[in-house]
Image (cartoon, rainbow, N blue to C red; front, side, top):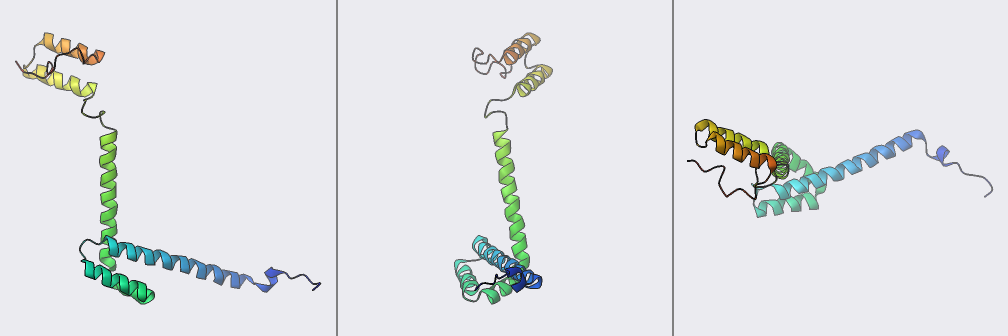
Length: 154
């Protein structure tokens, strides 16, 4: 075999297009199949036998099973996906609020100063007590203050 073989001539552009299309559809099919399986397992409204039946249908007859599942439960599948995304977002927001909060149970300086100003405005503490507590808050010398000194009303 002295002649060189050029693969580009044996595999025309249209054949390459069809191969790419089939590859894309194959990947898309597996994504849909796994999303349907995940939705079956995630659905809290369906009982164990219902899940087992759908799983058997989807695994034994995958094309027909997925088609029937999407027709029968497609709308609720979208709702469950949206609910799941909202739950994840709420959990993330709660985590961020907890983590980026005021450092645990210890309030920030601004919160303590606001609370002291409210106590002074209501007349629960005198101006002298307010100034002492304010100096403690601003110096961040909370360990020397007696417990409850800034919040106990007279």
